[in-house]
Length: 416
Image 1: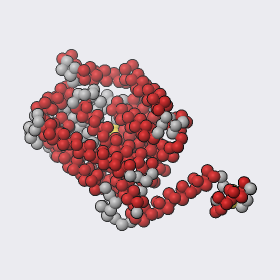
Image 2: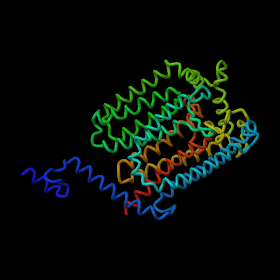
Image 3: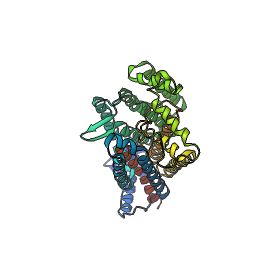
Image 4: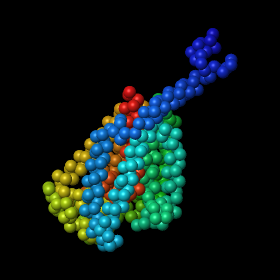
């Protein structure tokens, strides 16, 4: 009787007299559904149209922020570019080129069915680990190992790491969603990923990336439904380990001066260490409500070191004032909100988690960057998305935004 019930339940999946186990049947059915869905999406994607299925508000927000960022980068960088390279357009030419390349990649990625990222999640994580190891053997820049140099081309390995963490967590949480309340499926796999990642980042050292990775991981696990007890224990252990590394190891000795500088940026005994923070505060203060006007910053004339990088928001405040800075913050907030809204409309948990993670990454970087520039937290060296100079990081970021647009396209197609 039992065999008859099984065969009647799955008549098309019998192999002679042996019946396929129920678990394998369900897996095969889910793969079939995915294949049919993939074929449908692929068929729809054959018609190339930039607007077809794309979330235009999200796309337009990216373009507006990019344009403002490019203008502010030129304004912030031309004095330093002329002084260092003898060419006022040195930084803007590079950034504009990578921006165009990034936009093209973003649009192309938006046509890639994000479901296929499932099978690339673990390989990308493996590449991320490899890059974090390789970067330790690269020459140190300002006492840290963060850049992978390939000929004249260089990039930060941590940019790949952030994407790899979001992707791998979305992959694992989505396939183990119903078992996230157990230690084996809700905590253990993520600790296996996080512990070596954080140790490698600590070896660089890279405090800001450690903070972003931990916050992203914690947020995704919380959304994924991990049991609160395991969540609190794991988070406490990780935060405790990070604090131990920062306080008691030589690798983070420079962080002690930064913490002292954060507590008292006008302390004459650490004048050199707080130079950047002090001039950032001078720039913000001199901007006032309406700013000095576009291009009229004084601090960018070799007072604020490398104003085109992590402290570009200080120049934004100086030239555009509090009003201009608030408008840019609102644009970022709208971008993150729209990205999360797109993600919540995804037809599967993987798409929702992936989109939320990528959108949250932008929001976290903006918050941490502004907090550093305003001396709300110690200087950790974190860039402002779409604004700070950095071609490869901009391309990677735009590719990630392309994934969010892919979620919007695919969701629209699956909806019918």
